[in-house]
Figure 1: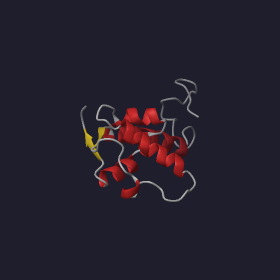
Figure 2: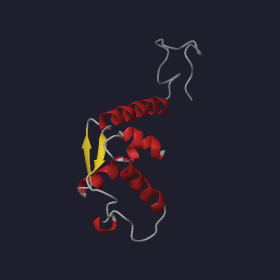
Figure 3: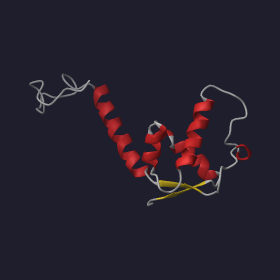
Length: 124
């Protein structure tokens, strides 16, 4: 848990160290949050589906042939990504609309690009 500004005497002094105040796990958590934030900004783009209508996912190997744990939610996320990939919504907006962190969309973007179903642009 993070402490508010000025809540302990060691705050922002030489006594605020990894042995007495800040834990390595806490420091790593802060680093990871910043890393993911920067990665999200760097990977943000405007994806656009390259086909008209609904693409055939089964013939491209993108639709599961057997039921497995979480396969329905993964398929739903893939179809949500395709639905919102009109070149007008950023990847961050799509992640928010799909209620997932942006990094969960990265592997789906790669699959759709490999299948020539998606292009990425930097602008609307």
